Amino acid sequence: MDNNPVTSADETARKPTRTAHEVRRLDYSGDGLVEADVAESPYLQARAWVDAAQAAAGERADVPEPSALSVATVDESGSPDVRTVLMRFFDERGPGFVTNLGSAKSKQLQGNPRVAASLTWPSIYRAIRFRGSAVPLDRDEVEGYFASRPYGSRLSAWASDQSRPAADRAELERRWQQVLERFPDTGRDDDVPVPDFWGGWRIVCDEVEFWAGRSNRLHDRIVFRRSGPGDLADPGAWTRSRLQP
Image (cartoon, one colour):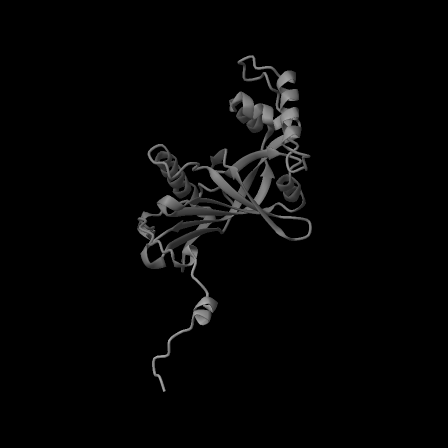
């Protein structure tokens, strides 16, 4: 009896082939995050990382949008929903973003304000996770930010019924042309008024986690959890611990 049987062509064909995704391995060579280097409050730590990501974006091509924020909400059926927006506000009160107040995310937050969000920078092996509740941005903050937007971005706030169906691209172009004619570019910050249906949300955090990639998948995870009243910059409002990767 042959102790080294030859595998038939049919048997070879039946064997599953590995895809490039399955065999690709990347060892994370980040700086990590040890307790001695963690700031005293989640705001100071997050501010340092956000500033570092923004600086990296100006120096390298693999951090193209350092303010890209994934925001997860819950719809009326209890199903999670996630999308990526841009973090346009960040201070001691928490991260914030702007949007159409009739959008899917806004309607979901009006029904259930619980929210999770993350800033992820794969090329520098860092991420920040925020969990908490969303509150509407103050109108003066919305108006101040809207005036700083480029002319075309201000027009798009009027042209798009965000999250609603469109027949085709031509419909979007028609809507754009209509608002272009309605609000001609005068070079002034107030040539396009802020729509009543446009605003934003801030995340009042109960938990902030910092993830730092390490070799051999032995990553660092430092989490701040709310233990009392206070904002993100108040060390007394938070307890800090390490999570296993």
